[in-house]
Amino acid sequence: MEEKKIMCIGLVCLDIINVVERYPEEDTDTRCLSQRWQRGGNASNSCTVLSLLGARSAFMGSLAPGYIAENLPDVTADDFKRVDLTQYKWIHWEGRNVDEQIKMIQRVNEYNKDCPTDQRITISVEIEKERDDLYQLFQYGEVVFVSKDVARHFGFSSSAEAVVGLYPRVKKGAYLVCAWAEHGADALGPDGRVLHSPSFPPETIVDTLGAGDTFNASVIYALSKVSPLGQTIEEAITFGCRVAGKKCGIQGYDGIVS
Ligand SMILES: Nc1ncnc2c1ncn2[C@@H]1O[C@H](COP(=O)(O)OP(=O)(O)O)[C@@H](O)[C@H]1O
Ligand SMILES: *[C@@H]1O[C@H](CO)[C@@H](O)[C@H](O)[C@H]1NC(C)=O
Ligand SMILES: *[C@@H]1O[C@H](CO)[C@@H](O)[C@H](O)[C@H]1NC(C)=O
Image (cartoon, rainbow, N blue to C red; front, side, top):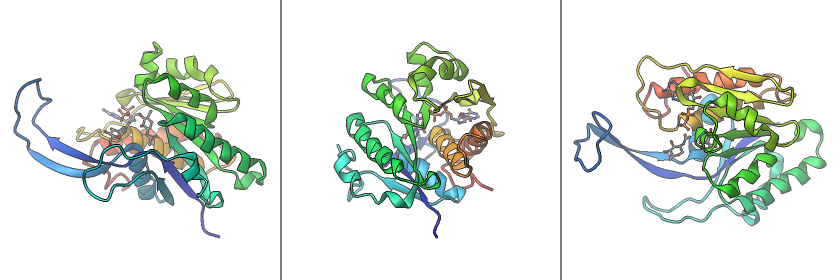
């Protein structure tokens, strides 16, 4: 039987990257050293990383026929009904249109109820933006990624503080993960132990765009390899920080595994 896939639901977009000598000051003109167009979007970035790591990945989101598109619709629960769940072992949602996303997650929960344990789909969610409606998602993921922006919004000043302070919001048995740039990342699970990984900075920081997506994808990859889930959450965040650190040392993603 073919290995089941990991699906990420969210955005794909075009990132136009201008490389400049230094961070520009407001209202000044700066000559670019180079420009490149690169596929971006958080779910799409994570799919790229998953494939580079050797996982079978799938992306679900709206695509435009050309370069320029505005207001592409978010994936709805109706769209999601067409997904053949038997093909997946893990589904990750980038928090956006929460009400629809909760319906999709409920569909997966129903599916899981009738599944033998080893065929179940693991659900993870990501909460990046400081938006009240998104916070409902805390209680829906078995693995929940929360950004440092959201953590700061709640008044926390480190990833360790954030996972402890926000843990009461997640569902029973879940893991909460928070990455904090050069400080690495922390995770907290049902056993109450706060686990930390340092960051692994490259010799020179070249490009941090999508470092967070690289981290999430690598954590998901590591956790999806083992059962029961969680035996190696500590190894998973360490792996996440290693791959994300490697990514910061190169432009784009080619070369994160080598
Ligand atoms: N300057 C850096 N040096 C080393 N590692 C980094 C750096 N920036 C990001 N990382 C790695 O990427 C992970 C995610 O970084 P983070 O800044 O939280 O993501 P983003 O800003 O892309 O949301 C961190 O946990 C860390 O492992
Ligand atoms: C990964 O998680 C971070 C929060 O730590 C978030 O900012 C980013 O958008 C996430 N990417 C995906 C694909 O979920
Ligand atoms: C999310 O995607 C956008 C667009 O590609 C990118 O600018 C941003 O760095 C990504 N966020 C993370 C946390 O990787």
